[in-house]
Image (tube, rainbow, N blue to C red; front, side, top):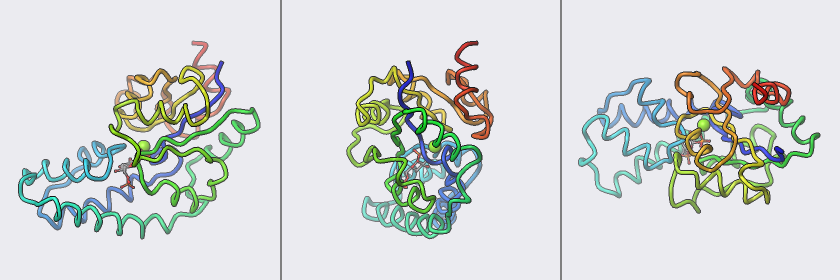
Length: 219
Ligand code: B16
Ligand code: MG
């Protein structure tokens, strides 16, 4: 019996991945690193400092910066990212998400947010969705990032539900792995091949509806 839904933010509720990519690319260009779409995909769901480490490693530059310089680069990226985030409006909610949230709420499901982003409350506010998510896992409290299940376990706890009573919705392979390891029902949004570990995959958020989930579970 499903009673709750745990949401990833970036790539599920709104497309902030393009903002993360844009802001990180500026940093990569500045430190003389390469940038490609594969790297951009690898950063999805990964926390800020781990993302910077991946970018530096990609260019073989992981030993070229002191911890203080790395902190400065991450801060610079975040400042740019927040400028982009503040252009978001409710029109930037991904297709079908507003209806899905309303249907979940009307059906008595509890909602929680499991985003690796420290900026999640600001993103939700700009989208006008703050009221839907009184339960947001604070990523600063985590000891392990996705694909570790910790964030998804804490999200279920925050709404007083067993993981088995929750669906988890993710656009990143690392996130799907975390949902599975937490014991929740994983729903992937995106490429079926990339997200082959998910219990259910929908090509986009437009297909994310309660009837579609129920139909997929009966298969
Ligand atoms: P911030 P999600 C993740 O959010 C993003 O996918 C990832 O690219 C980003 O580095 C991470 O949040 C941290 O974000 O720098 O804003 O704290 O997909 O878990 O909602
Ligand atoms: Mg995501």
